[in-house]
Length: 409
Image (cartoon, rainbow, N blue to C red; front, top):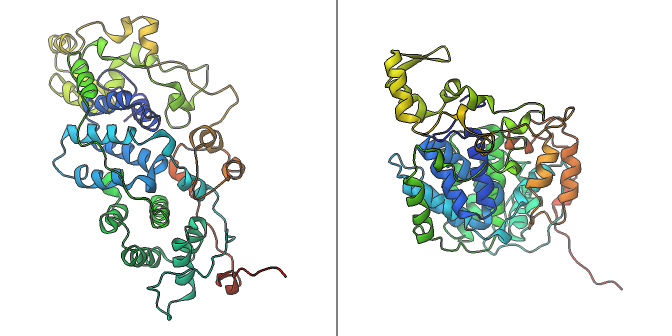
């Protein structure tokens, strides 16, 4: 997909993905449904699931495992149904706005070789006396809900050993739906679409937060509400028409993660509408449509004949070609870049506005998180950049021993 590839209804595809994540975390279920359907119309099936999974991971996460449980049983299937994806998008957007939690982001961004906190003697009854000191500390931290301390210890172990401790803890504590949750997390590539070393760590941290969380999952809506069905019917009557473009791309969702969010004010994306053919390449819907009338060779469309070119435009541009739209009509999906003349994209600026909600397991750390991110400089737009492998320093094993409170004399 090129940086300006267009969707079925001539939105920039990268911006539709950004708008989907943005509207889901803002609890706008109608717009979430709209952007989700636009991606499905464009043939972005796996990519849509990946966007929903990331939106859940970073903004809802371990406090709302019900969404993951539902997604794991429906969205990883080889026989995907569009309605299941649309329902998952709406369910994600209906998780209460005040229940968002950014603990995962803050804990990862505050990565440090220094132990955040010591544990107390409070220990699960099922612990064996012969347990290793590191594992005992890890389990105590989980049991006491000290997520940052638990994550610090997870970094002292191999990933395999950390997962073994997590599985032991979840099983013995009878955490709700732990078998399915841990399976879904360990095989996250079925929802995200790929694996990476960075995401292996991010998902491990998610599992740590899950073990620290005692909240029970809540039931999600089992079907789309009438208001959503009415919206779908209204949009479906306009498929392929300019009138389908019901919503503008929110500019607030573009910074750092889209092409337009990485270019200067003096640059614009409108040219991809004024010269539309190259921008159709990269969208599965348009490439399939083009294959009926021509071929794509070396990044350009070669039409079978002038007659077939004319047939293509008559069929897929029943109103006007985008070049003939008004400035206002084009502005729904395209416009100037977001950066000042000398500005560069930074993770600091992105996190300052995007990850400002409650962090239950990283209390009062928003400012410290920003300070740490400010040191990272230019950002490539990958959310996994928040995790940076650290070199662990040697430490006195005595700090693993629990702190015992005493009365002052």
